[in-house]
View (cartoon, chains in turn orange, yellow):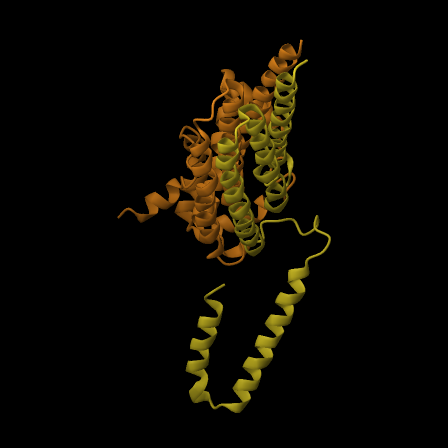
Length: 186
Length: 149
């Protein structure tokens, strides 16, 4: 009897870990700011450490303890690096173009995935229904978009607003700011 | 009902609690409105969730060497997780990536106001004491003062 209970608990554990990882993944793609992505990637990494541990319990071995050790010790590097980089920016008005570009492309990518069909899209759509969308809730997004046009001249503004739909075809890249890349080319 | 099966059950329950914390972090990261509250949700499984999982492993393996190997895992996580959370919270505050209307008290704001005022007074006093020839040096000083921000 007790074995059946434990088996059932393992199934619930697997479902919970999977759901948590998907929710974090959604936040990594969606943003809106790089800090949200870093926090979400931290959640994903923590989930990974916990899953490695849970697998050891399930299969009854201890071979991956060193892996847990290394991940627990190095999880900090990525977070601190990105947080340091964000700190070098000044106030919200001075937020860099790439941040705002990442906001736009991340949202476009998330929306694009959510509107296609397939199992992944179903999950993405379900999660995005949970998400209180920035602009409706946070009060942070509108500020960034207002400032966006100030960084660009008129032609670039037109190009940007026209290019937004094709951008959705691209995979979700954190720093993916096509505007910046184009700007730097001669 | 042997001791072994009871320990296995306790380990499974610990696993369940750890998994629930990971799931709660995911939900919090989706549902919460700003970076600071998301950070709050995200840091729960980092320590407590790991404690639960480590206890579950120790209860299943039941050997001292395994426990000895698990202690540093927890130790490293406990050392590094607060630093990471601190850095992210600091960056969130400085980029204004949080909702002031949701926060009740901002202790840092007073300190920043006081420091800004003191700097302004200091600059004014220096400006009176020294001639205009010094203004270039003062600009330099101000630049270095602002740079570490």
